[in-house]
Image (cartoon, rainbow, N blue to C red; front, side, top):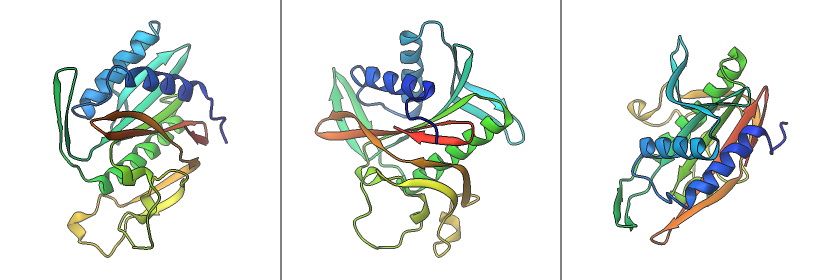
Length: 218
């Protein structure tokens, strides 16, 4: 397993810690993407940073953020899953709408699988997935034994992602993400970190970094 203090993980952890003091909340995933890219540039002036850079074809992949630094290419995928809230920060009003966090789990893990593919194909040297959220049940262990459609796609603190995962087959066909099945080559123990507190609401983030066939999370 890759050491948790990999270059990519340390770079992104430092950027998230710095960003939290400036931008404790975001309007959207695009807002988060732009702010993180800007913070990475400010703290690493020598870095070459691109947004939505196409790095693969068939199927096409456009990375949320690509960082070139010290001879390394770091591909970053972001997810910003939200529970509805309204807050004012430094005179700016933020109104967040509740999204589908069940599908959000699936697509976050799909991003991780995509980063694995890009490493194998040589399009990046490291991959990082960052999932930022104010949805507490994403990081909290499930409270009971109630079966859910996304059971195999849980991402709570202490969970381990690995192998093949399949969306529950007993729900309505139209409500299933496509293709409904994801396989990971690596093993990823999940560890959440605090990001900010806004209007009494906690935001936390999950950072999963991969290099080669190994994985880690911070």
